[in-house]
Image 1: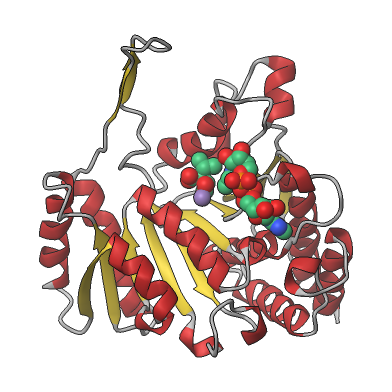
Image 2 (image 1 turned 135 degrees about the vertical axis):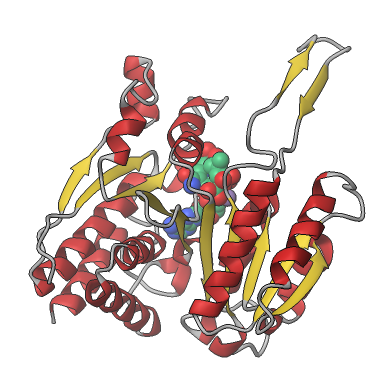
Amino acid sequence: MNCRVIRIAVIPGDGIGVDVTAEATKVVRAACDVSGRRPELVTLPWSADHYLETGVTVPPDGYARLRDHDAILVGALGDPRVPDNRHARDILLGTRLELDLYVNYRPVRLLDERLCPLKGRTKDDVDFVVCRENTEGLYVGIGGRFKAGTEDEVAIQEELNTYKGVSRIVRYAFEYAKASGRSRVCMADKSNAMQHGHALWQRVFQEVAATYPEIEPRHLYIDALVLLMVEDPSAFEVIVTNNLFGDIITDLGAALQGGLGLAASGNLHPGRTSMFEPVHGSAPPLAGKNVANPMGAILSAALMLEHLGLLEEATAIERAVRQAVVARQGTRDIGGALGTRETGDYIAAAIRG
Ligand code: NAD
Ligand code: IPM
Ligand code: MN
């Protein structure tokens, strides 16, 4: 075993981000205690509270500090007191861009059939991964408002698609399919309406697919894809799409697996410091009430450990979460009667055995 101390930056953030991150770190410690690891968890206060108190979203050396860690674990960012979402743009989107975390890896996996909102679907039917492009598209902030606040206002938001950016995410999707024994990759765009940017996606997809003869490529327009996600989720193994479409379809994916409280994600740049977070947001009405489901955050922490090569710990966490879900030892959204903390305690205890 490699005994180098693993350093993890933890950003609980806002709202239920704070609640669920406490449980995710509790469970990480339990899994590491069992395996004999001692990771160093360094909590950073970056959040709406911190921004409102200090005027600072991310300090000047902030991204460099993050790069100095092996991984980053985030709760959620978003607060009604910051209506322009400035801090979340710097902390969350800023980290994705500054650390060049070009893959937003979002598994959609049904852990228990009773949680699927679709009739008659089994666990085998809902098991795919969305590879969302995470550094380009409509998220780059290129544009502006002219004559803002007047009746002549013009607002422009540009979508950026580069050959390099599209190529690397499409290639990641094929590589992931190959490495995980999956045989189908579906690319979704809107090239029938967006004849410039999405023609580039078409070109790249065809080029990359030709180099993976063992993988079956498929293309769907994004509107047709969401229809099929509901009608027959078993049609998918790996989906690759742009930043905005990936954001939207992964909330739908979360619904297919039993709700936002269960959905996990990783913002990855293979070989570099990557960031892990649940798909859900800060859910202000639930904040601090011990009701938020921490499982999405806990499963994101498991993805983090897997990414760091701590496979034994990651597997132990996934197994304990699955068992808790099936036994209804969780929050109300999954049919349980536990609070956030008690759910974390249950999973940690199951891991400790
Ligand atoms: P949300 O994900 O916070 O909540 C959507 C719905 O899901 C709500 O009904 C909420 O109660 C429920 N929900 C979410 N997480 C849950 C959990 N763990 N357990 C039980 N129920 C859960 O989305 P929203 O309401 O659109 O956004 C609230 C804020 O969060 C906004 O500021 C938004 O920008 C931000 N946001 C942040 C992230 C992130 O940090 N990654 C993601 C999405 C939204
Ligand atoms: C997500 C979130 C973010 C996004 C928001 C908070 C900017 O919805 O991670 O899914 O759109 O990427
Ligand atoms: Mn989202």
